Length: 177
Length: 144
Image (cartoon, rainbow over all chains, first blue to last red; front, side):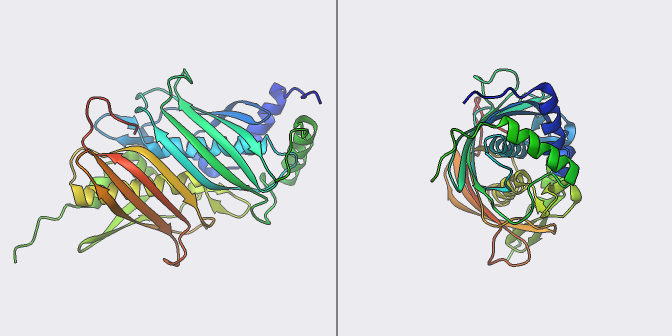
């Protein structure tokens, strides 16, 4: 089955749907910079409020945790055959080098496997070159984790997102675990 | 019995802009510390439930581990995280979150730390983490 192209418009909508309804993502000025099936790229601009070491100006690892957790969550949403609520089960982060002060962070997450209950994701945080990572992560997400309707909260945006996801997310790779 | 000089961990942690951004303080009683992440709307990840953002919980556990290391190993250079594994056990509700950490092993360069976060019931943690921290970073430090 051919994968339908997710257009810039769709990405703009994803951004709206998957980021603007997340207060903590807004607090970090997080942006979706790119998205496609199973994958998402998010960025967090450098901000002095996020400094973890006042002597060096290096961003705190927790910001990277939030960035990668959120990127992984979106990658999972973009890998699902339907809108489901998801919850992080575990997330392992490895820090390779400190972030460089004043530079923005990018987080790229790839959901490489979805089973009936669990989605498996890995991600990388970097400045400009993904092959020179600041941190990497692997995580698992529980699907249909709770009874709440999946994000977003506004019914119009939810309907819109659902339509787009249905038409764009190829389910032929879906697995039964 | 002469009182040992006890470092003020809350003051130490308030120097970290990101700890202030998340609204984290340290409650220090005798030889124990408890970190507190004071609830604010900006910590929410899922407004439908609502639930705290997984990233804020992970960051809180990392800061809890760093506070414990500062408390026990001294308020010198900040320890740098090498790796951190976070288990999300329950969704974090929109209320204050508390954290405690224990140093499982402290070597000369690396410490292994376990941290737990809970809300209204200590016996029902919302998340736990274990991680490795570089204590006295050499020229090639790990992250953070």
